[in-house]
Length: 533
Image (cartoon, rainbow, N blue to C red; front, side):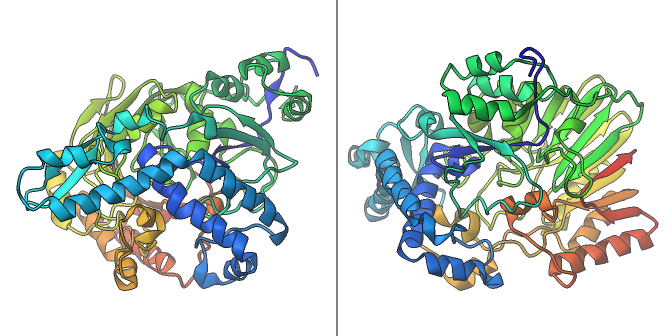
C-alpha cells in the first residue's frame, strides 16, 4: 500500500467498550456505571459461569428476548469467569459506591424525620463525603443528590477501562444484545485500549474521507500497537478513496432518514443530524444510507433523550471530528436516574455541548431556530428531565421531531401549539408497548418493585389515538412514523423483531391509514428515505 494515501474502509465496524462491555450512556456516567456493573453485568456473568445451559435455553425462548442472558457458547465460560475476577478487582470503587448509596439511603430513612440534617453529614459513607448534598423534598422526605461533576474526577470514572474494538462489519452477522453479552477477545477484531476522549479517535475516523498513512495512525495511538496489531490495522485500510460527498445546496430543506431515529436535515449550508445511529457501508444487506452519505461537516447534532438507542456512542465517537455543536436536553441535577448528557459528552471529548431546558431556543444559522419542547412518557414515570422533543424552523419550513413522546396529556401540546403555531412535518415514534421499568432502570433501584408494577410502568410511545391527537393539534401536511427499531443494524441495540400482528405494527398502520384518509402524506419509515420539503 502507498503509505501516504490510505483510507479507513467504509465497512470497518468500531465498537467502543468499557470493561469489555458495549459502551452506552449508563456505562459512562460514573454513578449509573457503578450500578450497571454491579447489578447488571456481574450478576449476568456470574449466572452464566454457574449455568451456561440456562442462558442458552433462555435465549431460545421468545418470551425472554432481550433478557439478562449471555449469548456465548459454553466453551467460553473460563473467559467469562476470568472477566468476573478482573471486574471485581478493577471495579472495587464501584462496588463500594453502590453499597454506600444504599447505606446513605437507609441512614436518611432511619434518621431523617423532619429535623435538621446537619449532623448526618458526619455519617455519610466515606466514598460519598463531599460529593453529595442532603435535603428534604417538599413532603419532608429525606433524600440526597450528587455533585455529578466531582464524580468524573473520582476513582469511579476510569478511562483505563475504555477500549476500541475494530473489525470488518458483516451484515449477515448477528451482533449480541448490548445489555446482556460482553465482547470477549475475537481473532477478527483489533482491540486498542484507548480513552474515548483521545484525539487518536478523530485521526482514525477522519481517515474515512481524508487520506492518511499507516505511520500517522500508529503515531496517533502513541506507538502502543505491536507488530500483530499493526498488521490488523493495515487490513482495515484501503488505497481506494471514498466516493465524493457533494455538498447539498438546495434552497428547500432535505431530510434523509438513516434508520431508527436518525435524521439528516440539510438546507442553506447547514447540516443537522438528529439522534445519530449510522450503519456501515458495503455491498451486503438492504439499501441504506451509511457514513459515506454524511456531509464532511455536521454543524449540529441534536439528542432527544438519553436512552441507548438515541445516544449511540458507537456512532457519535466516529463523527466527533466533524461535529460542530451538540445540543442536548438539560437533566435533573444530581439525580441517579438522570445523569447529565452534557457532562458525559464533555468527558468523551466533545468540545461544544449546549444544554437546553424546556421552551428554550437557539438560533441555527441565519434563518433557522430550534426550540426544545416538553416530553412526556417513555421514562416509566421516573423524574427524568433529560428528554425533549424539538421544534425546528428552517426558513418557512417547520417540523416537530417528537421522538418517543407519549401524548398522555393532549393539553400540553395545545399549550405548545399556541406558542409555535402549526407545523409542516411531524416525526413521531410509535413503539407503543415498550419495555418494562426494570429493563433500563432496574439496576438503579434500592429494591425491586412488584412484577405487576414493573409491567405496568412500560416505557412506551404514543399509540394511534394519541398520535392522531397530535396530528389534529399541529395539522402537519406530512406525517412520518419513525424510531421503531426495525432496521437490521439496530438489532444489537434494541433486540426487536416485529411481526404483522404486533401492537406497534397494528397501531402505526392504523395511524398512517387515518392520516392518509385525512389527505396528509404519511408513512412508516424503514431502511432509508429522502424527503424534500
